Length: 566
Image 1 (cartoon, rainbow, N blue to C red):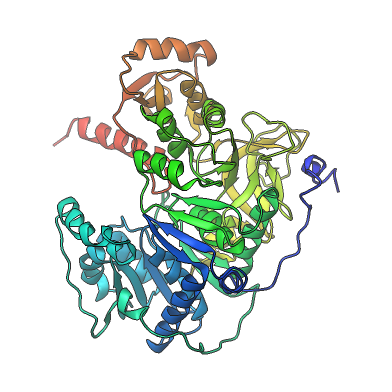
Image 2 (image 1 turned 180 degrees about the vertical axis):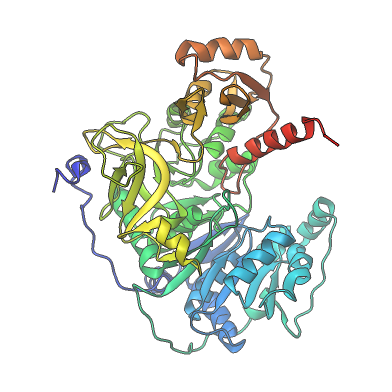
């Protein structure tokens, strides 16, 4: 076993190599939390507190309402909300009613929203009042029959609930008045109902879908990743086993990661409920609000992304806030610079480690150990319990220790496939193995390292260059707040390395100084040839820097500069 899975010899005795998984649907964990800890605070939202009993009751009432609307087994229902109590209630209610959740980014344009609604076949959507015009504009071109509307103020405490509409009008320049009639429904009216018995439906733990989670679509149209109840329960159970020093009902989880992203959904929305922990929800990431929230609410668990931790560390008033409540953070979505990891641990006294995963694996497959094991610099860690991983050559053969190839993973958290895309499914899933598209290697201790996305690798003058290596060096410069390296078209080298850099406030470092620094630590062919300083970098909702959009910008510029021939 240890020869096939060398990482198992590094497991602390508290983590089992294989776990027992209950065969319950995801929503069962909310029912259990409400039974066992009825008065425990489930959600803290901008001063408003909701107990597990109240959360369950409102979810049950909402689920009954959905069934009354005709929502039945396997119907898709979309949630287009930021992190709010309504997003949690809607999520569990859809599952209780027998439906499949379709998580939808509130920032989507009409075009993106229409595509996802058509592709998923969603028959209803829960959204914010300020997003209602966008949804109603595309409704006629989709299968959406019902729009359920809520407002941020609906779950704010007094007097914030009275003040918020004025703030919203000033910020967004919009006031939407929606009536609870016809096929438009008001969330706050729905949850006033009384809990009653739900209509029963057949359930298959292994096969039934809980979620359609759309991928980012950096390589064409987004695909709906089919995640079953088994996938989601397995991954949350693995997270629970990994965080073995965390006790049920005693921790609180900071919910900054969007719940509509699979990482936030698993590590906050499911994991917290499974453990009956308190979720401290923030509707969007704002550095100062986050610092104040940590200082006041004292969260102990803080799943995040490198850009979130970087933002906090670089705030000028960081020292005014007490972050010492934080015990454990697993960083995902992008490589975690070592400098950021070390500084964050100094500031909080907690542990910050890098993990790894993707939408297609619910999402976590690897992580570094939080406790009782020495740090392994630059590694994404080892596979989770019941998770296998290996490195494959371009021909699909298993590669030996130390050789770079494509990371492939297998485990109960791996998706069922892509929604209505059998060809894409067949290309990505091979004999149960998920081909990640990430290049990496494994060392002789079973620790894995990501060198880059297959698609992000830069080939300049015949050399393979991995952006992550360049970014690690740039992050070591004391004036650099954020950095991303990309390959841009070059007529001589094929591609050349360009670095996009956000400097810390007040910095005056020049391109030449940064170039000299990089060349001390990188071979000449790897060092960036071009630097561009920016105020900010384009990012996904979860804080992942959009390298591809920077490359597309460069290609567009080249097209515009190219002489036009008659």
